[in-house]
Amino acid sequence: MNELIFGIILLIAGLILTTIGGFKANDGWNKLKGISQTNGEETIIAKLDSIPKSINTKNKENTDKVLDAIEEVKLGVDEISAMDGSNIKTIKYPPSGEFGTNILDKTKGEYKIGTHSMRVEIPKGQTIVVKVSGKNWQFPVFQSIPGWKHFDLKTDKGETSRKFKSVKTGIVDLEIYLVDKGKIDLSIFENGSELPSWEKTLKVN
View 1 (cartoon, rainbow, N blue to C red):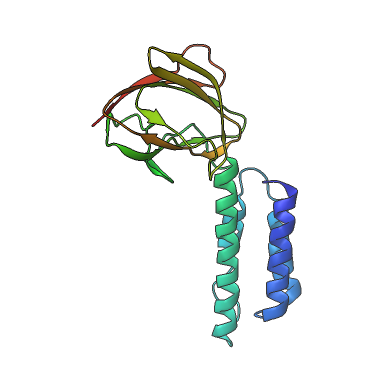
View 2 (view 1 turned 45 degrees about the horizontal axis):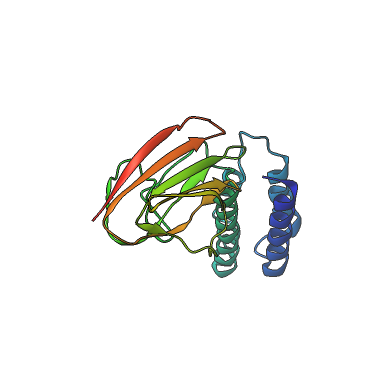
């Protein structure tokens, strides 16, 4: 988590505490200021969780407002961490994505005709390339969620292959259409590997 995010959190929290007045502004500021002084083993979330639940026993409404605001800050931090890969330790291929069932799910082999995801969660400093080969798949060039660069288009006997390279870390997703019955071959290259790290064949019903 970089200094900009820390600064935003401290600014928002300071404004909330000053405006609502659930407890002394200086006390709240000093407690939250400690967030920016933590090391890699002590996260922002842990610091926020340490704030007492009885900030102001005389005014429960103000206390609840402060706690609700802090919870929103926590959720914002969670979202940022997920999107930039800060809290992802290993490359993950979840069962589903934004657009449907994930074709990169290692545990699934059969898929229905329709819209699906090509989703991966990538730690900071890592990359993957996916080669998709087959006659029965398409994808929209303009994607609502950026994260993949497509290249190396090849066509042989009606079969199209194309490579997709991750251009950011965190959550990367692609909308992809399985348009007809048949098979699609996937080759996944992790972190610059010249040979596939793993491979998969999709059976489209």
